[in-house]
Image (cartoon, rainbow, N blue to C red; front, side, top):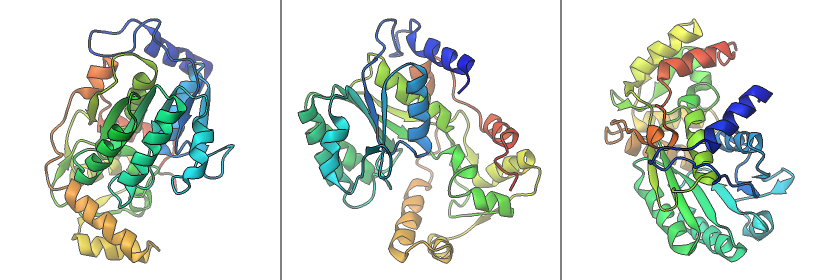
Length: 303
């Protein structure tokens, strides 16, 4: 982040907000925030924004300076010791078996550590993720919990699992003709930071989407225009997609889980947009076209 960007970020969260839950003057949290999965796509962005505000950040990861491993509860208390708030991004997904148990365990440790607030990243329209949300809510007692349910990340095409498909010109995915309101992760990170640092978000559940729903075929066309190369959407069945993943080295059980998850998420029930980004930030969510242009400008598809 440049100095100017840092200053603008700070202004964004410290100015007087509207009566819709945005951060208020004087409400900025300046004590330590633990960012779990701090080197991931969302955690890295949240940590950068908090640091720009002057908030002390602990970026937790398995191999980082602040050890934090979702598979090893023994280090959680040390990571949380003295922290006021935490951003929780569970790996690999809140819908996986065992996630609810991990959330309940984390909630108990968070409550015992004296944490004041938690912001949880969840999936939009994921029934099993909702079970994990409730497990955390039930275990964390008086800790103020905000749940942020996200639509499909736009950045999955530029720095995630679908980057190679875009570079190869064939976007193979089991989405059929379903439309999805792709969300820019920068918008997600801004909402998370607002919930971590401002007042009025405890108990809230935000469903974040982009401003427009596109089919994967439409998304492929926009990606191709921005990347300067043809990108064709190739719809496949869930079973066929699992085979594709296994061909890339994904284990059979994980490939099957992912194919089943996408079938659950991309059946049309998540196609509608929401205005929750605007509710929290006072501005609209980023358009998918703007995302593609920015990603192309930054060299995402130069490979």
